[in-house]
Length: 161
Length: 419
Image (cartoon, rainbow over all chains, first blue to last red; front, top):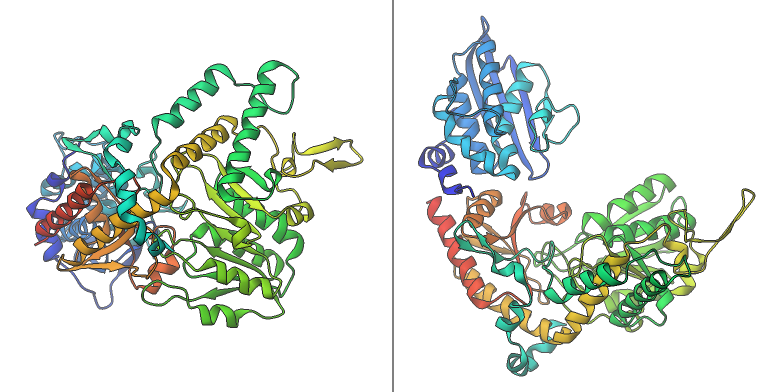
């Protein structure tokens, strides 16, 4: 049995209360909207890329604490990173959330491993993944993604696999 | 409706021994982590008492065979038991005849049966179907599919901020193009008990058939389809202590006879040649293929179980639980009850300021408390209240006041986490 209180740790609660990079960007080079129709969550992510590097990133939307904290910590983690490094992080976060990556193994996730407990809460995995999912879509010029569609680039990461 | 029982609550208390009832439900003894289970998701699915499980085991160990077919002993016993279950359902809703009860896989299946069997045969382009904002998606989507196919129009009865239907608008929606009405008896998201008897009677004056979605009503109050005078009434067994995968459709025999079959196959025919097939009489016309025989027998056993307690005692006790939970919830700062209709079943939908329902659900789960969070398959209701989702505690007659207190303590704990 998981302990969800380990999920609602102070770092997550803090990012939920005071989300970093919360807001919008003027003239973003990439942006996407992510939906989780099962819970009504919605997240907009916009970023500026220059010389293959994420210079600025912002998000806003309506979501649960897990999703908002995940988005806040994600934006802090990928700011200044190259596209390739960001994609690695997206992959690792997804694998951690679905239990494929053991956070004890070498990885680039750093403090993001605070979300590792989500693997024990299958109905909440999508909450944590939605920002990453949306960032992936923005980087790949998909303007809108949903956690419940066939072309969902993260569908392979869903709890059903 | 529920307040009718207010006067008999003291008497109900005398005979209603919840601790004894709880011993019938083995699952209520489990722990979630190191916390005892507090199961408050009964509107999604109720738990099964040992008496129903025993009946299922008895059937499976001594009576099982396919029905309506062979002349051998087991087939005859199984057929008899299956038809006995049908008569239990018939008596439970006080239908005139047992052939007016069709076994289906559940409420959704029943509504789809009526949509295909009645709607696709009789609804035409330009016809209007009246539904309400309170409907579960299962009483919206089939009619939307029909409307799209036929070019029919769906008209929606709005609700007020207590979560009650706007009766005046309902009546104004009727015109010569109105050909069908679908009404939810009790809202799954809010617990509102709709005044369906008068709504049906109004539709009757316009000669429009009415389907009642009774999924959330049948487990909590006495149903009398003759007194209601509805044309169709539907519900599932698993919300009234029976198994999943079985439900019922009541239809007036005169209507069922004019309808086309929903599914084709074995058991629903009188004769088959490649030139022409003639269909069996009701109810068999609508029960193609081998039905969930054990499910039907479990359904019957669940009805026996509820009757042994008395549905009026169940209603009175649950009403008491609702009053207590509502009272406690109103004392929590930052908590808002969604759905405050004058007549409600024991459903408490709520929001907490600044806290998303999914976070509430996950943290309550840590305390062993099972509630439902989300839109409850009733997005139009959520839209009315301008919330994406709510948390919903839904009580059954085996819940206790101390479980209400556990919920309230759990909610205070959630607020503490997000302080």
